[in-house]
Length: 140
Image 1 (cartoon, rainbow, N blue to C red):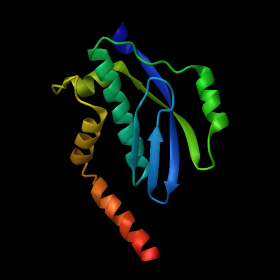
Image 2: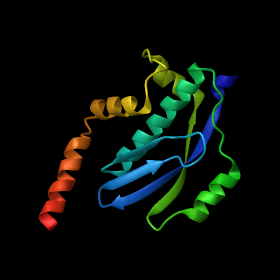
Image 3: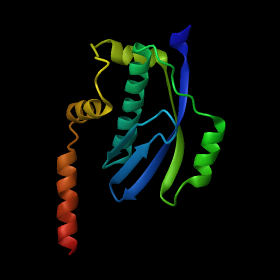
């Protein structure tokens, strides 16, 4: 049955600075990324965005992106000094349970979903950016 389908994707974690993480899925068909002050926030946001994207593909009856094994090997070889590669797994049953309870429009963009997620989890990007600007000003 299709609903039991498992998904495993490579996630690249980049530590840009103290309290500044950027996460993406760096392969064809996955234009998803997230940034946050903590690693946990960034991973949760990236995983939620991944699941939302897969749900949207499911609703549109479009094929799910596949990650070739060679892509993972290439990521490991090409990672930078402050980058880490990890695998993140989910399954269609969990995705459908999470997103089917609320009406979701297919035209919702990842950016709109990220804004929704940030608001519902009390994460303030503008506060974070302002704190970074204040820190930079204090350094000069």
